[in-house]
Length: 408
Image (cartoon, rainbow, N blue to C red; front, side, top):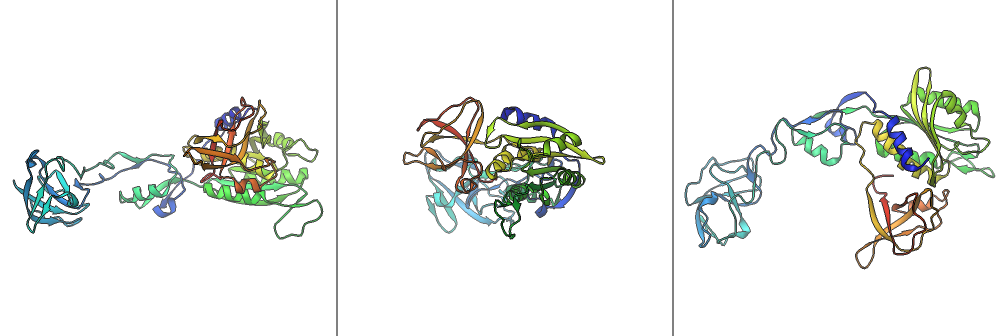
């Protein structure tokens, strides 16, 4: 199945979880809003000064001659003087202070032509009527949505909600994700390695990526290449999780039983994808004793796990969380070297993006692109995305890259 179609299939299958809970504002970081946040107040609540300077009515400015105004007092942020300047008068004002009645303009202190004890001189055309005034409701208007349901709450959002005086928000419950690795050759970290065995790195990679998504994790450890053990693990996972992510056990090898068990427990939407790395990947829905979960059967090779998780599992899990997942933000860069590519499949190659001496973005491949070379992922800061229809890439040709930061 082509990559684009596989992603469409997954998007049509999965649905957001239903549970909603109220949490304190500081606990909302990384959670998904379950309902719109309606602003109870306007922000700012009043017209206020954007600068330290002098507030006055702009209509008295002369376009050709200096304007001299008498300073009758000072307004501080949170401490208005209550004074109202008349003709030929102004108030010294500090940033954030409410604009005095009758004033609509602020002259920044550093732009004054002259400042004396009780007066200020304004040069012609140094300021225009309305300058340096923040309008009431300029940021948010009372009664309007400040944030909409489906928003994944970031640090800036915490500040925005706090600016409205809101102490707690309604969020979707955390998505519960069970994950495990399969393979007789795998050993846990800390165990001695027998000949032909390797340490299970995939579970740690998945732990990191799932944690970054803010999921509630159920680490089920290692599962042997045994049909009964694998089926028991999947049944247990259905009882405890909304989604299941496995690594290994989805290739065409004799010991790979996941496909048959998935068919017995539910539906297999697809089994292989036209991509490299990560061709053997399963997606479907399985059930046990009236409980259902979506299953993402990722390949066993470490790089393939990360690539297939990002391009398939991650957007699906975000959708299950109720988040409005943004489209992939691909940027163009020139390839610093030739790249070999076979038409008819999508390839994801690890790369290092940098700025060339001429100021343009340039990307080079990290070296050998084998799906078992996990070091290539630690050295890379992006993935070079080469779609089905593309063939070999010559040095200097443009390619699309996806930045890692914040994703994996």
